[in-house]
Length: 80
Image 1 (cartoon, helix red, strand yellow):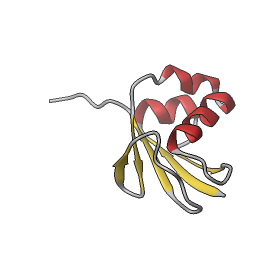
Image 2 (cartoon, helix red, strand yellow):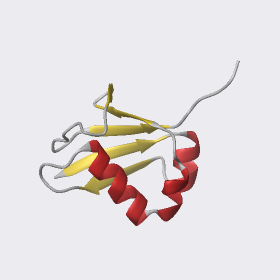
Image 3 (spheres, helix red, strand yellow):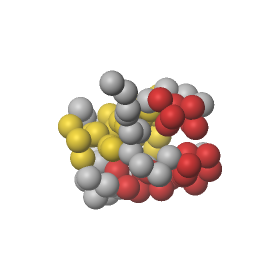
Image 4 (cartoon, one colour):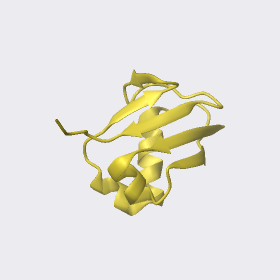
């Protein structure tokens, strides 16, 4: 199945893209996707703190993915 992955700030810098289309196996979770990203893009492993959203809702890494889902990887944000 195919999911659309969006990256912001440091995640975008580490991947080199702001959006990717990724193929994941049926039954994959958000955590499986993150593992696949770390394997394919070793620099992505430098992002050790992040939130994940699936279809615009914050999600846990054990959240199952479905074909066509949008997954956002959100790094920590700071500012005033």
